[in-house]
Amino acid sequence: MAGGGEVIDNKQVILKQLINGPPKESDMEVKTRSISLKVEEGSKAVVVKNLYLSVEPYVKLRMKKFEHPDFSSFTPGSAMDGFGVAKVVDSGHPKFQKGDLVWGIVGWEEYSVIKNPDSFFKIHYTDVPLSYYTGLLGMPGMTAWAGLHKIAAPNKGEYVYISGASGAVGQLVGQFAKLLGCYVVGSAGSKEKVENLKNKLGFDDAFNYKEEKDLDAALKRCFPDGIDIYIENVGGKMLDAVLLNMRLNSRIVVCGMSAEHNLKEPEGVQNLRLIVHKRIRMQGFVVFDYFPQYSEFLDDVLPLIREGRIVYHEDISEGLENAPAAVAGLENVWKQVVLVSRE
Image (tube, rainbow, N blue to C red; front, top):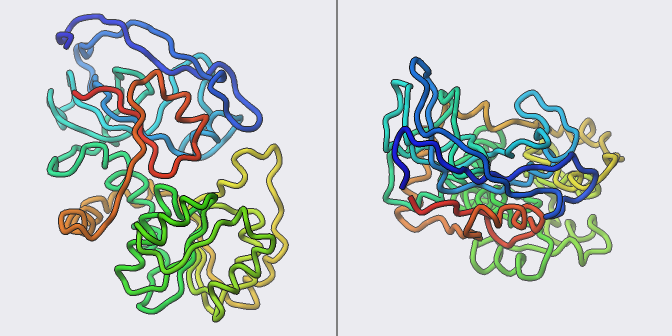
């Protein structure tokens, strides 16, 4: 391992240009640039060695022309970035010391200089795999926990439907809801994913939306009495069908709209009038708003992991050079993670 003040080669995943439509491996390339492993004197920055990178669906959005209050498009010619787990190599910040393990936004590269590390979370619990902090104990886990517990606030016996249920967020929301005594159904895009939802994750039922000619009929089959809580990860035609099946005073929690990620123009929704007729509460949220409650989240979720009450699987690609393939093939069965270094 390189020493503190040394200037070394640093592999980075670069976006060549903004895209229109699904990402391809050729849209990205791995380049090598130099980096100093020493923080400049007087700076409050930290230098970190990246260990794991989280491959999230929103990466596809950021490869296009995209504006959002919390993040924007990647800059062509520069390293991509996202949530990851890292080890502090050098620090000018009083909160972080050399050797600390952290998670937060890092570059898609071997080493990163983080100029404002205040948003980083220090990792105190290492009796669980470090990679979990890219998912179950990181942003996706927080999204699942906040969306269900803080917004949907389910009651025992309620009917919960989750689209995109095999994704990093969906698989966790379903398990959290089951632990609260809800009836849980999920949808996914392959037979293997559907079987995993039912046989490995404990969902009461699941269906492959690609095999359903009539989504409204599929939902009525699974929820003859209607849906109390819908965890929205897809949007588009699925949302239209769900609105037809929501119960009176039901709740829709909008985590994402993955159906639109590969579209040039967003799809319209036809049944929004039902929000009024059925008194549906529909709320979107961004997980960053709930980061101040991270310690409460850990208090809830860490015991579930240690007691074996949560099932969590990862698809890990080894090597930074395999990150472009991980993005282009983001139809994996489990949570997609890139292993950059084993420390």
